Image 1 (cartoon, rainbow, N blue to C red):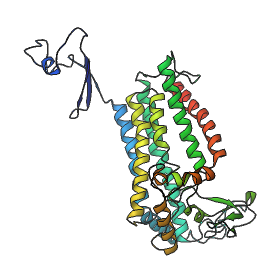
Image 2: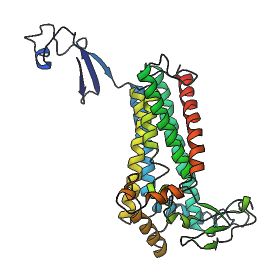
Image 3: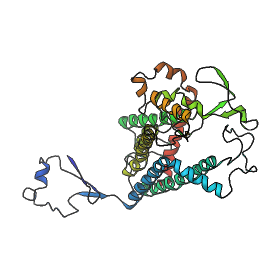
Image 4: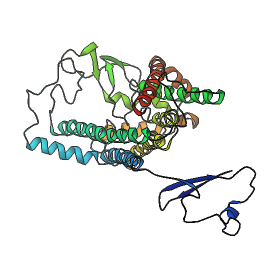
Length: 375
């Protein structure tokens, strides 16, 4: 019998084992009368393992990463407006000499200029800041994870070939199941890059001749120069649910949830593994839910929709997309708002299959790298 005690006051996770031949209740075990050897103040009575400084630092940086991203997204409109005003005051807006390459797939609003107006300048600077915050917080979390995991013994040991050491039948099944989950998660996220949602930051690229929502051919707005392969950017096409967005309105981020759970086990099944990878899974759920709340409350920009309250058309398109899609995968299919046949017909199968195969290789490489860095 193994008994686990959590001391929330002191941050201890304690456990002890009773011999198989001893049959007592937990109350009897902790009673000084029935157990004369028991000392409530002795740390020798139970094997206590407090949260180490490295694990605490890891938890701090994971929380910092998640909260900063959700916070920056929630206040994005204000930040972009402020940064745009600052760029204008510094005379950074409208400079003709600051241009994108001719082959770059620009959009109809910004043309080929880097900062054509204050709003675009604010968005560009915001993206740079968002990326910098990601690099600092997530990079610090990973550094803390490497330190914490180097001193912790792994329940699951993945060797440099990417396989579990001393793998029995049960371990082999779990390994295959978790590896398959991680690979499929990669496949879904990679496929979503070609089937983007308006609630995500991934832009939508189409060839010059593309199908409109009604199925008729339309010519997309001209973009600067002869773009690479005739590809143009048109984020308005994302408002039409198709393929992956018929399954969930968050096809890029929600796959982080099963990936985080699977990698927590594969990386070692330790507390530090669940703090990092499980923390990223929790962030994915919280971040996507926060996006949905902003759409429901009409609180401002989300994803690549920057002015839903200023543009009646864009606001209506976002609302229409939101109403026919679901947060939970296949939720809209189950309640009849979407049809499974349409999902199967429109799903980017090639990208998904290639992404899943690539995901298996990437997951093995990640596990091998973690093993090498913490060995």
